[in-house]
Length: 261
Image (cartoon, rainbow, N blue to C red):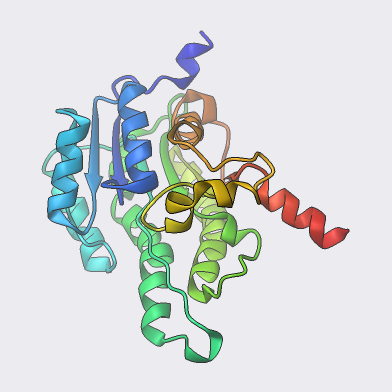
């Protein structure tokens, strides 16, 4: 019985930003946990198609740029050409931008806020009926937002729009969760720390150095991210509504400890 708590047998998932990094980790984990189909989306067609081919016949590529409301609607339409309901939506697509305060550009603000904060709202809105069709009291549909520990604690890097977007996404998760639970849709979020990815190239290329500043003394692995995502997506996470789980090896806690010392 305990193992069935974490089964995703027969479920269908859609993972944005699923062609690489954390999205790819989770897409693979969903498939291994029993998903019937995992649809992945990203802006780059070749990369999205290649990842779907790598992950196997149960993974389907739907490359779409979802940085606009029109893009969110286009992805929804393309998804609905394959399926009529959706069990799990993972809002993972994201961007970052770093620049000194006096030089931070409007383009670096708009790009990051649009993709990291606006798109999760409007894609979930576009897929609302599709998710509600899948959800029941006994087996709710799931929406999981990928936030960041940069939405919980300050990163010394000058990534102003990224910090704002991820902090906003954490609270937006709470607001949306309060509404969506009425339709048997459970929304929650994950706040990753250091994982090797194209977005976190420091962790990818200098993992041993980064690990020195992490209480757990290592960067995150695929299994660390897959474990929490499967937990939230499965029966095990059905009663976790509107919460954000930090998966960071203790970094946010260490920062709080240093601040209070």
